[in-house]
Length: 215
Image (tube, rainbow, N blue to C red):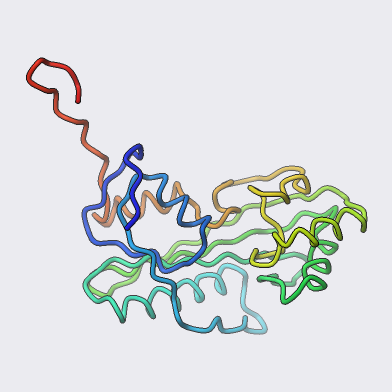
């Protein structure tokens, strides 16, 4: 279980995050929610030949969420997956340092699209979906810079081989859209979806104590 007492919301329905990403965990925790982290055991299927970034991200998110929901019936399960698209190519996590360097070289000096697909499986088994896209522009970077960043190891488990909130932030020139979406979870839209479906609610202020002071 994870909870941040400083967050603005509280959990009304048992909630599971079907992702082992520490970035998504931190973002969801920032809302103040109590939830479990249960990574999906399923393999990630490859993208179809004509599949759009949004369709692929949504398919992966639902694949993960349903695998976990099948093991934990009666709970709300949130699955998410992030993909990077540039010049018609979908970039997931790099296979090795050489692949990370290839991805970084492809992104350098260009704009690309970061798409996160989210799937919320409700306790009754029905599914709600959303996809968020953010445009990210990378500054031109030298081969030496890209090699040095790849050598830090940070790109290894990141879609597109960089972390905007980490060491790779120096590569990002500007973004258009949700910043949390680039990190891995479009927090504004996810919180609204959870509110609309009755999974969370705004946290109620603490009642005053007998002396009239807030506790």
